[in-house]
Image (cartoon, rainbow, N blue to C red):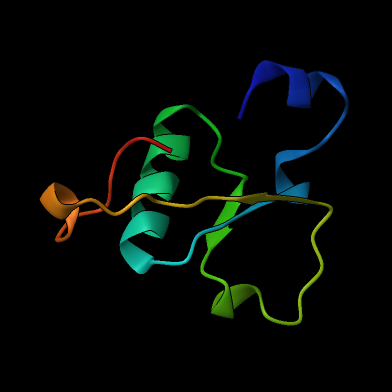
Length: 75
């Protein structure tokens, strides 16, 4: 979460991150918690099914031959 988003009055509880893979969700959650943003909800597409959230951030990964078994840390 960048400081500009917090400055415009968006509460962390109003922000959700959608990621297609569970390993990616885990990595994004850990990264946000380490940055002090525990209120941001991170889930897979299926877990957000039928729910409303004010701000949605979509996280994607790029699969390369060398990273097929792991989730890339560059997001």
